[in-house]
Image: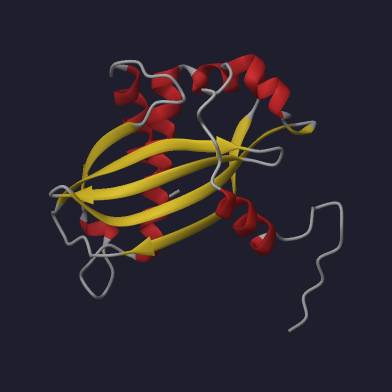
Length: 180
């Protein structure tokens, strides 16, 4: 909820930007706000995933995917995330979120996000996402039928498969009891 106004503003702005395909990289420019920083006076590590959402929304809106998803009653959800930090963003600093789809498999659509300032990568994340409907997860066949096929040269890196398997929780149809 803390980014709802920023998200609505980004959705509004994205509708007025030049179109992209879902398979092209997108970029949005942002500035570190007082609500983004923590006690160490740099952008809070949890805030990165929130601003990466803005990058995915921009790409989905500009490609027309957002409108088609919403018409079908589909919603995007994050299924897994990993991030690496290189440098800290500080209060007031300008930066961009660079977003691209790196591939898909039978379980998810994978995005790479980069936080870039002064031509340098400050942080990079990989996010596994799913589209869900009231009936459950949306199949790749339905996704490709609605959004178009990915380029033939879009090949998911092998390490992503390993990361996904090694970090996955059990399906919601199976128990996942808590025990240390």
